Structure formats: C-alpha cells, structure tokens
Length: 217
Image (cartoon, rainbow, N blue to C red; front, side, top):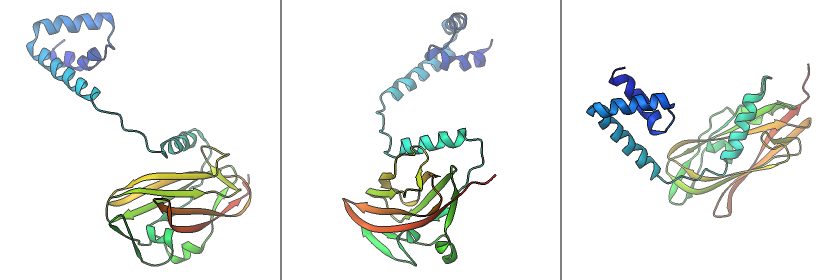
C-alpha cells in the first residue's frame, strides 16, 4: 500500500479500531515514513484538543423533539401535517405590532392569509401532526419561555399522557423555528392554549383551534 492508503487508516488507528494485522502494518509503515508520522501527530493533537472541549447541555425540548422524530420514522402510515406556520404576529394577534423585551424590539409579520387564520386545522385520530412556530426576531434575546397546553383530544406524540410542553432558551437574530409533534386522540373541535413569558411574566396568551376527525378506511 502507498501512503494514501495508510493515511486512510490513521483515524481508525488513533481510535484503536484496527484489527491486530492492520495495526501492525500501519506501525511498520510509520517506522519508515516521516510524512505519515507527521500526519499521525497532527491527528493525535486534533483529537486531544477535541477532548478539552466542554460538553454543552442539551436544550430542555431536545428529548421531546427526538422522541417525536423517532416515532415519526417508525410509523409506516402516512402522517397528516398540520400547516400551522406562524410568524410572531399570528401568535400574538392580528396585523402588525412590536414589543420590547430585554432591550430588543420584535416586529411580527403574518405568513398566512386572514382566511387561513380562522379555518380550523384538522388531524385524524391516531395520526401525528406537526405544529410549527416560525419566530422572527430582529435581535438576539435570552430567557424566553414558550409554553403550550394541549386539550383532552390531543397529546404529545412522544408522550400520550403529557399535556404540556415548554421551550426555554434564546432567540437568535432572524428566523427561529419550534416544531411540536402532536397526535389526535379524541374526535372533536379543540383549542390549543399557549403563551410566551419572560422572567415569569406572561407577555401574551393565545388560543389555536384544532379539529380531530375520525380516521376512516
């Protein structure tokens, strides 16, 4: 083998993933090749530097999002997507207004038509739907909490017995997206209650209509 072939094995060599025969071949080559030894030293330095990086804690909503993704991938049936795409203005009400939070001004613009705002979104019993909140911010903002309370006929896809969802974190300048996977449980017209808070102060409460229909066929 030439140097290129051995270089491809260096990463596995550093991680101790080579079999005894391959490891012996690599070490034999390293003893006679100054270029591959240099490559190995650089790779080992890089790995050592990676180990010095502190782990960043996962956001509180990560587990819910991951569970929902896994469940979605496991389902063979076609899932209903609830096209609830919101800019801040839809979350907070009608037309255009701004609030001042932590020194940053937010402007809210509508992404969907007025007709869509008053139309009930639907999901079938037993199927998974996605509530997507597109949050647009003009500034970076910290310590924002977004709470959702689900009605009796709807549950979190990742935990059918859980009726509440909270996202806490930072908003970056530009567009931020929060996706919540829900499942229809009981037929009827329901309302999803949500609010946005900062430092335990409710900035706005709102209600989203959602209809659960019987699955046919």
